[in-house]
Amino acid sequence: MQRHLISAADLTRDDAVLILDTAEEMARVADRPIKKLPTLRGRTIVNLFFEDSTRTRISFEAAEKRLSADVINFTAKGSSVSKGESLKDTAQTLEAMGVDAVVIRHGASGAPYRLANSGWIDAAVVNAGDGTHQHPTQALLDAFTMRRRLVGPDAGLGQDLEGKRITLVGDVLHSRVARSNVDLLHTLGAEVTLVAPPTLLPVGIETWPCEVSYDLDSTLPKSDAVMMLRVQRERMNAAFFPTEREYSRRYGLDGDRMARMPGHAIVMHPGPMVRGMEITAEVADSDRCTVVEQVANGVSIRMAVLYLLLGGNEPAVTHPRTEEK
Amino acid sequence: MDTHDTQSDARPVLEGPDIARVLTRIAHEIVERAKGADDVVLLGIPTRGVFLARRIADKLEQITERKVPCGSLDITMYRDDLRMHPPRALARTEIPGDGLDGKLVVLVDDVLFSGRTIRAALDALNDIGRPRAVQLAVLVDRGHRELPIRADYVGKNLPTSLRETVKVQLAEEDGRDTVLLGAKPASQ
Image 1: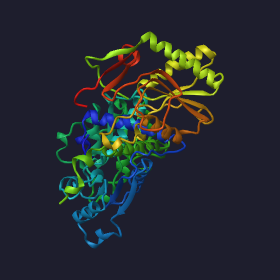
Image 2 (image 1 turned 90 degrees about the vertical axis):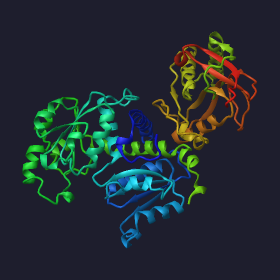
Image 3 (image 1 turned 180 degrees about the vertical axis):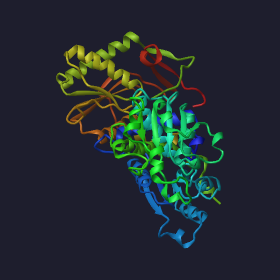
Image 4 (image 1 turned 45 degrees about the vertical axis):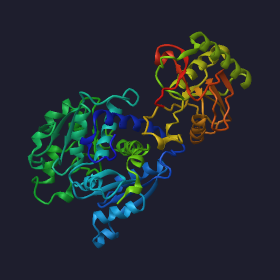
């Protein structure tokens, strides 16, 4: 495995399956009375959040604490960043503090890549979402949820998602979740179909390793999993569709549409859900909806990633800190 | 635990029938010491300790005519040498349904060497429950302890030099039952 996790596209099939298998074991820790492992004792991890995200931050924080790492939370609001400090200066401050890993969320696509490859910092970098680019741990937790539900927790060990048909519905244009999922699901052998209004598909989508459709109803009967994407109101600065009502009628998932899916098929959503628009309450609260499971699985996946990046000696040995600048 | 592949000059010190015999003896010793094995839980340490634990559980069932709970305990996350090697893939931890609280837990491993694996296993047990007592059964004790740890049940004491390796092969994983003693490869 590499030292950093920047993009789901960087993962090979074997890397991805190793992470999913490791997460399966990590999930068992969550069932124990003492949900803690001594594995990362003495390692310091900074959660560097330039963009608001309660859900992802607490998920990473829970994962780090369950592995006994020392956790520092850094939010841009009220920090030196709001006084004009650059990413480079922040990185060098963290480097001077001897941080072992940085979990970074940034509004600018490419910020984690820059942090990992500029030589500013020696720590492992985990991308927790950058702009409209990537959110690899989200894609991993989605794949983990699919494997558990569609293949089975025990039968799934060592398996990928070969032949599974996954449909992603909604705002693909602004969605790092969609990008990461298409990359990872393709690596894992699944057939991905994106369904969205033409205005919410990015330029160059034909080069992505997936199918594209504008018609949700014809895609549903052949889907093993349907993932609804959030309509990102904060990024809707232009008129991408006429009205919320029209979007909801063409691309929203309601009980009727869910009934057209195969019996075993699941409904996923990266959260937070906009009930009534992308998904009706009936679907969101049904047994087939995995939203709550996805949250629990997120902690297991993040534990697995942190263990595989930091649990061994490689960063410390191949990059001795004493040589630094 | 030695995990090197077959060395050319490795010689067998225990063969299939010997292994079956010592496991039978260990099972009888467990029943004797636990006075019937009523609250015994066997926990194998992956990989080969798990197969040995299952075999001992089968023998205990024959002796006591009662099913003995058997599970596995992966100690990777508790190792004290994690930072000296690349991260290892995790193996399965499977705790029998009734848990470990108040039970007599018998840890089972193939080779007892430095004792560090067993120390990690004791740490792992701490996080899972509170057994009444913990005992240790090993197929081979090769000596060279680095910690004050001793096995309660030993299949075979095998005095070795540090220049030797002990390799346990079991039918479930390797296709045959044997314990091989060989010279350490020069690169080690």
